[in-house]
Amino acid sequence: MRLLALASAGAFACAILSACDFDGSGLEIVPKFDDRFSFETDADMEEWDARGLDLDDPPITWEIARSTEQATEGAHAVRFRLDNLNDQGKIWIERRYEVAPDQESGVTITFDLVTPDFGTVHLWRRLAGAAPDAPMTAADLISSLDTGNGEPSDVGFQTVEKTVTVLTKSDEDGEMFVYVGIWGTSEFSRTYYVDDLHAVFMRGGLSAPSGPSPTAVF
Image (cartoon, rainbow, N blue to C red; front, side, top):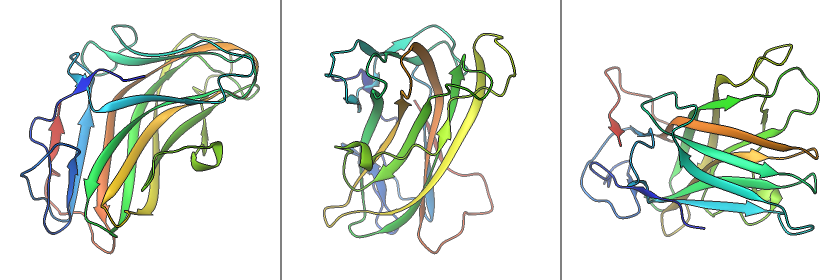
């Protein structure tokens, strides 16, 4: 399932650190770059793919789509819907980057999760990570935080900022995949929204510059 379009306002290719989107070229940023997505146009999701695992036994309904509901940055967000009849459905969006081959990097992924989940019982897991290969099994997915909104009772959708930092290494071809999504862990039908997603790549062993970090806004 191909998502919409995310055309880069100036794609990134770097000689020293190096990170660029799949079709990109041009901007050198040392020692880091910050790629930001607010999903404001149909073109905003072109470079993202919708992916899923454990959705067939039994077949379950799921959707990942751009939406005008529950946006936190601008007028649009990405909606995730999962009718988790098998207690184990996983859905996410992923994007491929080209970075320096065999380069160790710290990748920090920050995004707004708009979630109705409250309390501490029956919370699902949120997915966020980076790796040299696209996730193919559940073991490839990082799910370190839950989907709770921090409220003790049902107050509807609330926005919480989620952050994860992953230390990883690109492969010999310089590929890196970033992903964000939802892991269903109980038999419910739920909807979530993701917006204002940042993927910050930091070259291994370097510190962030003291001035403002370069940001691409799409």
